[in-house]
Image (tube, rainbow over all chains, first blue to last red):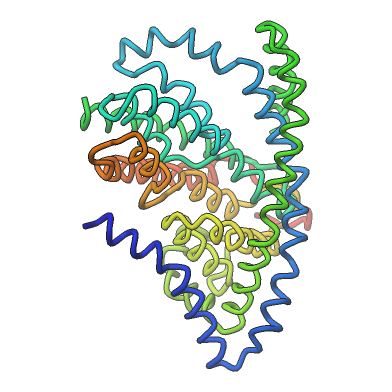
Length: 178
Length: 201
């Protein structure tokens, strides 16, 4: 029921928004075509502005993932996690979900496919992926677009929120699914 | 950021040398650089579309209207930003789009908000409190329905995939509220932005 309602809202949100905006513009006699093209001009500029920041972040993260550092951490901490009832396979996910959205989805698909639908690891990783946003990508895109290079506490808050999210996911899933 | 960048690059090379994956690490430079340009270029079209639509929304007074409606909340979240600023309408629209999982629309609208914040930023190279708050709201990834995750679960024959919606929503809400709280706290505790115009913050 809730799911169906949400699907309906997701499907109609954009069409509704676009119709509302264009109709309001028509009523207020805003020249829609000219205004649209005028605003759209910035699209290229913004995308190009982002490139240097995106290259810095994505090369750094790509190198980090290729170096095997994540496996190193997983092997070291795996036994401790097992004692806390946390499947060690979810550890790479905890690290990767802040770094890369596609990689996180890949790790999650691996876990889901190898453990199957009824396994706790599948459920825990589903909640972890579903509740996350790729913090580093978001920081690079938003700050890159306006040329901010000193992030002050923005990154710290993002990372702390990610950690809280992981801890919360572990607690909530343990209560619900274990 | 400087330390993190240094650690990511130098640390990866050192770790790669230890684990014997140095060639993978070097190859990933090219892949990473290529992917970032692809990502940026793939954004151009959709970015242009939403920036165009949002310009119409701005000219027809919709953004301003939304800014007014959500004033009680945004006044607390972004105390430095003038109450009439259209950035606040953009913030609300970008947040709603994210919550509905419409990332394609959320990002360009969010960038508009950041540009507005940048106009009133005293030091154009460092992040203002308002920017940090907006990023905190975004990095916590508040989303009502994790559609991709559910798709994967359906793919492996999960009987009742919607049962993960409630725990996911609970977790993301906790992270989201925590992020806002942290941003509020750091706005007071963190070293203030250097003021290039010479006044007081």
